[in-house]
Image (cartoon, rainbow, N blue to C red; front, side):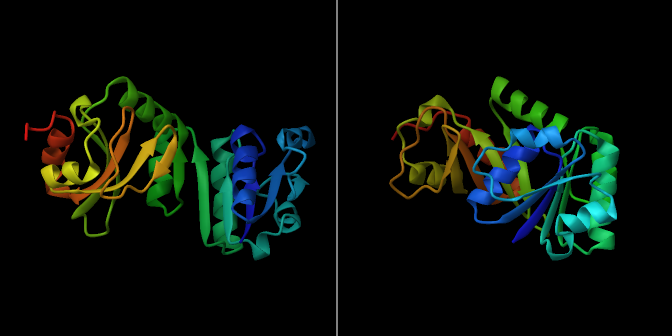
Length: 220
């Protein structure tokens, strides 16, 4: 897939390289040509100097054949304008905008522009690690009946098999975050210190499941 990125800061340059590693073609736009120095020497995509919501700039970046567009510059207004142009003018199917103001992010989300509210996302992640316990809902299916949530383990579960945790909680462990990497567990996977478990459960049982995960397992 060809993907256009607006903004070659730390997020944009990292995103560009990650997409290239996934075998996608990338073009990255920035008003400041000096910003492209953040890209490593092995970057194989295109760089385009210009304003990310300017028609000619977008055309030079290959927006007409793009399957995705990410607006990740440092300006909320520029990001949302560029995202709307990509979707409404060029019909790009997958569009996302980075937004610093969480109030704006909520508004644009309701308007159908997917957003990542970076400040709230960072704050939520820090809080979850400072104050482990409970759960953070990450995804709900369209019916609202099933939720994927991140949960913290009670230390008593360390050394226990994932299958025992599933049996005790009545929920499914979809994947683990271990040392910053994701992994899909098997029935023989043993839980380790620092693991974050991502569990799918019925939405009305989330609190009960979190209580099991956040409490030491019963003896026997």
